[in-house]
Length: 512
Image 1 (cartoon, one colour):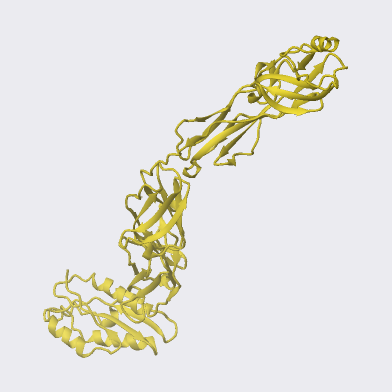
Image 2: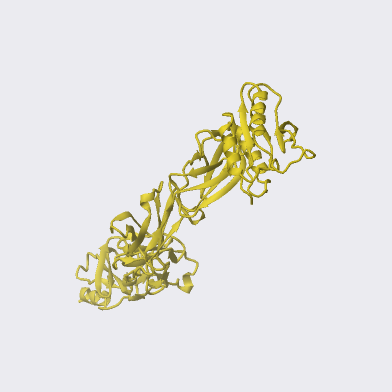
């Protein structure tokens, strides 16, 4: 009876035991370490094992009295208690002792981030700002957060950063996809991911395609470079530009790039490159064509050729010669300038191309070298030098003097004997010939003369003009007399012609 009574006294009551206590932290945040300790009041109570429970389910059992959760998460929140199983040889039938339950609530360090996109509708080529929005708990505001943005599993930008924003300078159609962001604390390490957002980058079709040319001074010059600029006012993404010749429709160039304007350079333009051109632009919504642009290729004047045309094989003083300058190639209008010994003589224009002429009345000073210049505004070109020499200048002067002298004779029915000759041996021969010819001419008043009015001898007549050079035998000289002829002037002229000297040139001048 005594033994049974002792067993009754020391038999524990089923339920919670005050001598067993679970020690746990009072405030827990995500990422914190949770240490659980199961403490006993009496050391004499020998423990075989310690078990820890959460919400009535055993977590672990171990021989030591401590249990830890290294990094707490929200799902670790719950009701915890511990239990021990005693080992008492005298009372092997004793049940395990259980501590009172302790509620542990793991608090959120920061909420799950939210990814926002601005502007909401992404347009190709425009910038977009991504923001990872979250906020630390006020009780842990000293914690440091960092952020990272992802597209289709790849980190964007430079990776993790302390900034919650990521600015994309330009979004393209290839940037469409699934985006999200992540936020984490450095210490303790708590990482959370936002929901995924689908971003579709909208492409803007091309519009208002135009073609223009760029050339020095606005002129396309043969041999120089030409730039054709194809532009659009709107259009995003990769745009394919192509240039075409209207006559054949063939493409003369093609380029694809992300730009609203593209240049096509045509090196060393030739005359055959002139014509009408247009360009097209396409970014996937169909090609758009520009208006037609006419291109005129101007050709610099080639080196001109100067020719001199005279009325005879050997030009003499008094002749009128034609100076003709012509460039074989060159866009009109062409201005031609004429030079004598590099002194300007004059100029002439060829509005429709070709050559131009300048007439020149020769004087003794016009012997020398001649040249011409062609200029159509694209650079002047000078011809080669053409020489011109004059000969027989004395013959010309004698004829000129004779014409002037005979023009002064105004006698009714008069015949003027203008005697012009070239004396190669001696000047007296020519003079005697003229004197003899005139001696045979009867006086106009011979029939009416009286002894008191004798006729003057031919030797007594004084010439109206004398041009005698007393030099050597190769000198041309002339005598001009005016004679009053009788009424039968035809007979007198016949007499003179019958007795004329072969070295004398006769000319008759009628009364004006």
